[in-house]
Length: 207
Length: 350
Ligand code: SF4
Ligand code: SF4
Image (cartoon, rainbow over all chains, first blue to last red; front, side, top):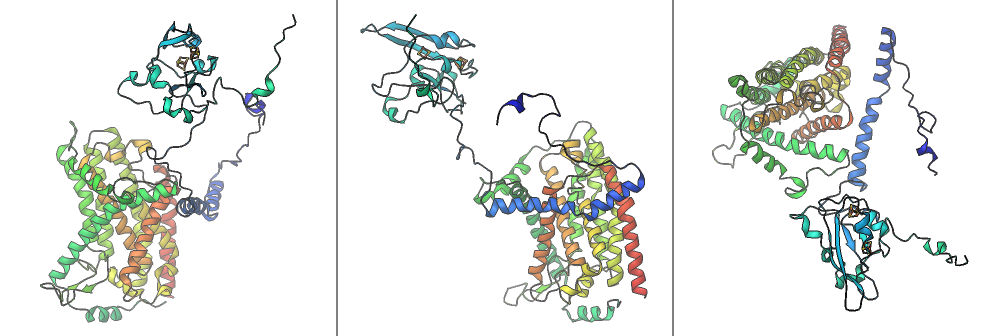
């Protein structure tokens, strides 16, 4: 389905189904007829049957909707934007961040603070990286802009904690090295699209 | 049509052992214990049934399947602070819940909740005592029960007026409206069965339908049955007639300012009333406990069905406006009830 229907804001021209509510009775006789009709059309019992059917569905056919939340959790979309994760390179285990500073720059609530320096190999190293989650609005710009897919949004949505600082440090967000094999690629903003291979073109060099 | 002969009933009664005051006392204690327990348990059942009908689980975490939720609620109700609002009429405010609870149980004293039985001889002290089906078998049983339940509405009425709260006042006004509406229908609808049986005693009703399903009064009085059921729903403040404390409209109506055990008394009263209405409907229209030997089981099933029906209706139907209730009771149900009574009378005379 295309998006045309949603973009059309002219009420009445879309594919809406109008309810046929009939005429509202005005005269006494019509009102009386309506009452009699409603009484003997057993409409009320249809309502009773619906609730009973749902009860049978729930109890006998396993269609209970309740999720016992802290014990059971619903899967969330990979595009969900919760507390950030810092990913590692799968081969070397080194963190992916190259310290380019783009995320710090783009962050619209100015909540990323970072410092870099050159290590002994003249490679840029992140010496400090924090996100102030008291300010973060989880807009996803940082994940989108990151050229290395280093900063992404994780699935951790239970963000209640005693201190904001408890998950704002680089080390806290970084995939633990012993769980590297469990690291998942992020499908949300800024991720490689499924058809990325098809979109690769030769760099036009002929000026 | 033959009016049930009084003589047969009388001989039936005369064959029974003598009702002693010990028997009545045992029955009274039995009713009080069983009904309070059931009234509490009813809140659990209600939450569960409503939840299932909305495909939820309902209370689950306190005890197995949430069964101990009752205890948790009880502890909460008992330990809550008993607040009396500043400008309320303190005495009336404090008495009102007791009226609801007390009248509900007084009404039950004249209702046969279980069949009569004799305590087996091998039990010490009480062995051999005959426990009657009714704590006090009044010869005007139905009248007494309906009157008591009607008096019970003084609870919400006084509570609403005494609490110096506008929602309470509206709740009280609605109580008056409800009271004025259904009471006529209850009386008139049950009049036709009374004419057929020729007695106001529940035991007579029960014995009159002793001939199996075919002799149940519902087949002779289907209209009266439906009318009584509708009026009964109004009498117990159940949806579709729960005008008194409809949260979406009047916060909590007459119960707005109540908390803790005083509020709990309203609650217990309401559930006891539900049971009373269920028992009356079962005895007057569905043959009561007249099945020999299995009476205790069938009456439980019948009462259980009516109780479930009340919850079921609550899950399914929206509620009506106060003016619609008045319209319904005075302009529709009352004429039908009168016509029903007249036709019954004509058929009996012919
Ligand atoms: S999600 Fe938005 S607000 Fe939060 S750190 Fe990233 S860019 Fe900043
Ligand atoms: S945009 Fe990515 S690579 Fe650049 S500093 Fe931020 S996290 Fe590191």
